Image: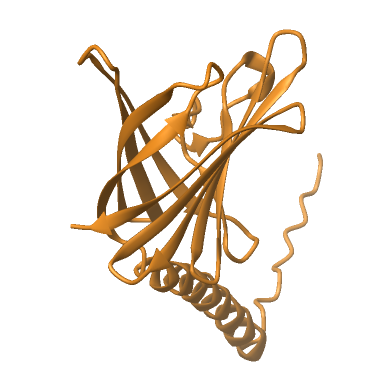
Length: 194
């Protein structure tokens, strides 16, 4: 016959339990404060903005572009929606629109794009090695910057940078495109707050 010994474990002393609860509450408060701080900093950018720009093409011709951006708060970060409408000389108009949600990271002022959902229902970054854009944002002082990195089939890369800087009555938009580190195109304009 086998004997079974049952031992009772001692419960944590009350003071240790209180300390663990206190640490858990402190961690929750720190995380909530970081998210609130990030959102408070972003509230300055929230709004709708629009304007236009003249863009010189490689052949020397000038294209007119109508631009708009909407920046709004989300539950866990912010969202940027922007569109560019190219007005052709023959009267045709081609519009491109984008919408990306950003969530805070562990780095202050740096935000990860939440562009797709994984099998667990969590939003994750896209994979540039599959031809998808890798996108992130940052806020430094009065400038909200959105970066997009694309990796081509042959390994070349494109880097887009949208700097949206707060100014009286709206935003100053500075866009730049680099191919393999070399400047390819820049656009600067003022977007009026609606």
